[in-house]
Length: 58
Image (cartoon, rainbow, N blue to C red; front, side, top):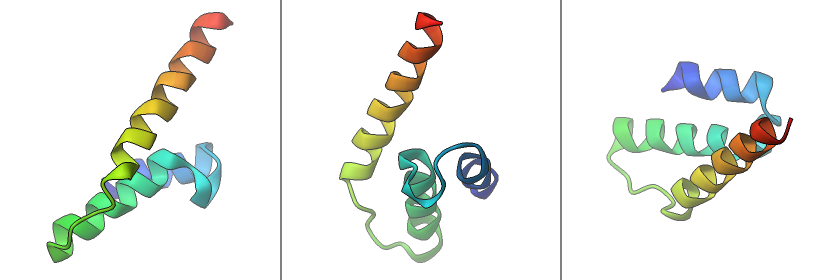
């Protein structure tokens, strides 16, 4: 999960990248057992779908 977060941080939009934020929240959840921000998953999924649409448009 940390490798995925690192990749999205480098190749995405940094700390504001939804996938990066979701990955960091999951790492926090897995290591501490604290609940994550539930809205991050939906935002991450929507962001990935938008990237997929951009790829098919090109």
